[in-house]
Length: 305
Image (cartoon, rainbow, N blue to C red; front, side):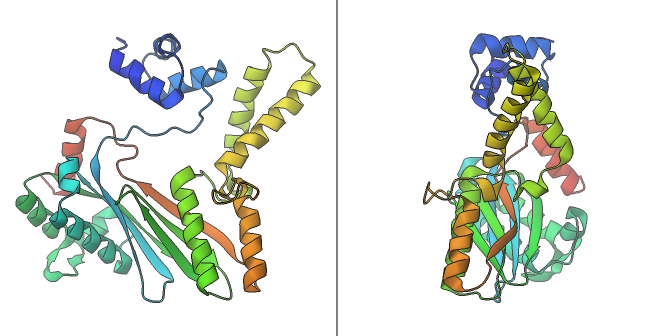
């Protein structure tokens, strides 16, 4: 496969590795970006295990929360250009989609698109999207939605004018200003540091084994006894998990605390246990390849063309 300069540039941005290392990794991986990242990691060149995602599509993410603050919805609506994403008509539409998602009974995108549009029940959500495309004169896509339901409280945070949005599910017998502030702080943490998992108990065993294998391959380059190498691997894995797991991350407002310890402080202040049982984080365009024809195909499929 022909390795292009653009591919090398993309891998450099994701991995932080040098140009020649990236070209070598892509050549060895026959142009497969994920395989090239793993190649670099095994070689100890790339330290970033997080796959930042090749973000291409423009648009906005948005949230809506119910009056009792126990249900939240998060949505992503894509546009072709950043110019449209800043358009007031588009922004209002995204907000309407978020409120639609808050009340939806649909469990997938097909069901959601077929629902009656809350602002005009005579048409469907799909019809409302088609009408908005006609007004804005640019392809749009309602890409995804998710609901979060809590017995206690759902916290929300939107960053960068709709570039990143987070919903946090909080469990607490008491819901006061301190709990609400903690929910927002944790949502901001999730937005900024993008943890993969909530707690270590949420980390899949196959992921742990995969990481151990990579770390062992890195460590094996050092001339040390196997017992020492295993301890080194577990130490490095533990360090990784402190980045991957929300509860173990250093709390962004106080580097003397982890998020878990911060929540224990809040629990003591409130007088009951305050925990985060889960979260949802959306970032505009994450995972969408930068290929216009693919984006257009997704839109056409959604509109039944």
